[in-house]
Image (cartoon, rainbow, N blue to C red):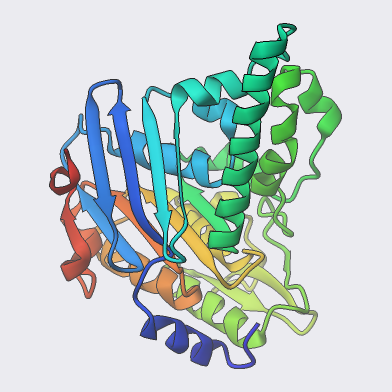
Amino acid sequence: MCNNYQTYIAMENFNHLPWVTRYTVIGLHYYQNYDFRFEDQINVMVGESGLGKTKILHLLYLTLTGRWMSLSKQMFDFLAIGFRNGTEIGFSKGELEFMLLSDPEIKKVKAQKNAVLNKFMEIESIILSALQGEVIYFPVYRDLIDDLGLIGKRFDQARYSNEFSLEEHSEYERIARDILIPTNLADLFVKIPGNFQSQKTTILISTCNNYLTGIRMHHDHDNVVRLVNVSTDETVDLYQLSSGEKQIVYFFLKVFFADTDRVYILFDEPELSIPIDWQRRLLIDLRKLSPAVFMLVITHSPFIFDNDLDQLACGINKYKI
């Protein structure tokens, strides 16, 4: 990590070219086609209901993180993604389903499957090489009671082995990466790891405190971050926060604990449960906390980009083909 965190962000901001430059979906819901061309690190897509915005974001997340079993259950015909380093990937749903078939006994079919399997191994290699970072996905449905209960828990492979078929076992570690964050948000006694710079921690705390009312995030001498009642100085449990405050704390801590400086944020309807003035600040403040090499935001709210991001917002129909 760069010695000066603000300097690192400034250096990243000089280069506005996104690491994901193109994203094509053919046959979304088996009748919609989109070809997205990204020219900036931050992209805000606006559109009415029924255009497939949520599904577009979800498919991109599943592909970039290699969740092939989950992706195979979605409705599409073909997906392609281009990256800034000049590499690209593309595959049909038929190829994906064939790759996930149990090993066939017929020799000719087995050879065909091996070829498709090798293709997806190459796809994973291309994605890892092109991104070299962490993908963070905020879906439109955010059940924070469940999500906050999962964060910080150890991944239990034995538990999941009873819930997934054999073909899904390869996704264990990918599921674990979403669950494992080094904090227990249920109580919000956050021990800041030593490898995180104090300046980044300061940005996290000051930013969160701009949203909290009557409560402050406090960093004590033991390098622990906790929520404190301003009047009584007592520690506050996360579940005492309002719905909007929980969302804010969750967003910023999720990005803060990313394992890399290069973060890719996929954000579906960030305006949910937060007031208009927070909507205007949210993406800007997330950007302060992380350079966010690539950010794709889907929204219904004009207030999300009623700020410096106004020029980066466009209607999703622009990319319909």
